[in-house]
Length: 227
Image (cartoon, rainbow, N blue to C red):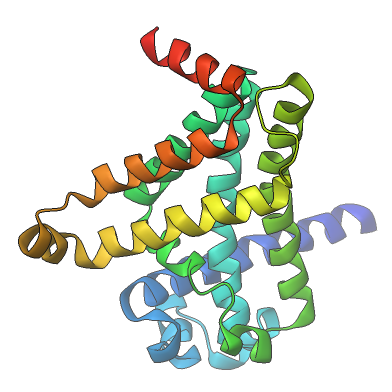
């Protein structure tokens, strides 16, 4: 085997080992969260020595970001698939909202991890390389939606006086806040106030879309809902 072939094989083995470690870390984090999890537990779950674990990941925060990026990639791909259908902007934005809700339902643990993206512990302990990788993937996901909103401004379906980045912050913050309540407090809200938080999420999206779209955009969304 050539030197290049040996090098490629070693790199594949290293990549495979890193994924095995992430599998073990994911299991521990899903069960215990970031704060309670330890490198000892992750090493034991991965059936590795702690020393070997540190050869691949410098700290548990790096592992947490590595697992989190798995969820971020799933969400990114789901949103990209929706946008690739090239439907009118208002319908696409509504489909993105549904895709985010579907991601939440299918991947609750990943969703919970995303909530800790701005955790001081992550920024204080994680290596710059892992933080950069995470920021890059997050930026790519946000740019998908920002570019869609820019397209809506150009075609007249989105109000031209709005900043697409600000619109996305509002949409993301509103949806995330309600999904966090659905995740942890849905029964309490239903019992105390007779509120179905999923319906509240749909109402929130409808109100925000009504404020974001022009008359043309609102008409396009209404027409697509009838089809």
